Image (cartoon, rainbow, N blue to C red; front, side):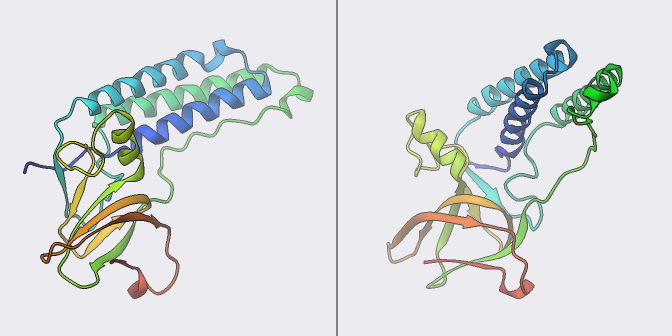
Length: 211
């Protein structure tokens, strides 16, 4: 079985949410489409191209062997991130320039646009194990699983559904909603959904156990 080390969707999903947020906010505050419409349209095209590129990738089981990185770290080609950063910076500049042309009374109704090229909270290290021990554990983001189902692929088959990862190390960076499949040598198979949230307790208690 082929092993692939990428195929993450975090970049794509964050772009979709980002574009929708600023489309909706622009309408809410009465911002003319001419102010940032060009940049938002460019982001939309980039995101659609990103999705098309991913769907053309060969299907197979991915490796999941890094203590850092998780499902959202190696999420796309660097040039996409660089292009998005340039578009976001241009949007902030145009937005605030337009805001400065409004009468003082109207400026209070339109928020300023602060662009900071940093990332927010992401994955967290969890110890992943099975009970009883020894299971082969595979995980897939819920988004990938649902996408495979919608386009007619078997979402439980790593050879048919892009996005499955084989857990090969004890510690793994995870966050979000996943489907998992644990298989033991005696033939037992367990499949279910798991929600992984930020853990604020004792670091030694950050454990996910699949049964």
